[in-house]
Amino acid sequence: MKTNGGGGADDGTARPERQVPAVSRAIDILGLFLDGKGPRSVPEITAELGLPRSSAYELVQTLVAKRCLRPVDENVHRYQLGLHLFELGSSYIEGIDLAEQGGEVAREVVARCDETVHVAMLDGADVVYVVKADSSQAVRMVSAVGRRLPAHCTAVGKVLLAGLRDEEVARRYEQVTQWVRMTPGTIAGLDELLRELDVIRERGLAFDEFESNVDVRCVAAPVRDASGAVVAGLSISVPGQRSDQIDGELARLAAEAGRALSARLGHRDPGDVRTAAGGSNSW
Image (tube, rainbow, N blue to C red):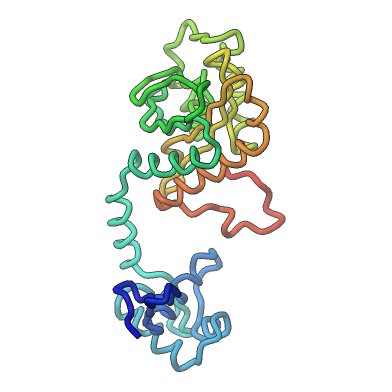
């Protein structure tokens, strides 16, 4: 039977890509260490993955030789992740383009909800929009990449400010003598802003309740890099006549998209290792 170049048969049935078992098992071993439980011994690895002990030992020794694992206690032969993985991860992070990755995620969000999506970064006390993916609907938010707005007026700006300590937020506003008010609902002082940021940190999302535009509501989620720092925000903007959607599905979608973009930047979601009793605060 003739097969195509991708490994599928000419009768249209898909076949799985061929894998090298030893490589697959080695990657499974490395994956065990992502749960935050610390070093492991070969017997523990054997038990968790169901591998023959001799195979697990040989794989671990190979990973040690390649600096992907390192021993931490020679008496009990426990291992943890090695420096080579850090080198590989650093090289991966250096090659990431926030605008490119943000654009891909933003377009995926628009495909699911057909509302306008932005990715923005903080510059002083302003936000600068670096990505925009437009809704196809006739009534939608008017904005542009490169546009700058006061951070305290927007959901995406507030979610970025919430990633800072209060002292840093205060420093960014110490020269402000008259706060910009884009609508009657705009926050108009530092004390009010700091109270709102506390709520955002607890909730994990920020909302713009017609604060930058009297006809638009927004919800925004933080985007983190590999270090855990908030480096961007992703927002979904909805015209007033559809604004009730913000409180349910769109809020969940924004949170999901923020995590997805964070993962592309190398961040590990705390939810991956959080216990059931650990709470929902992602800050």
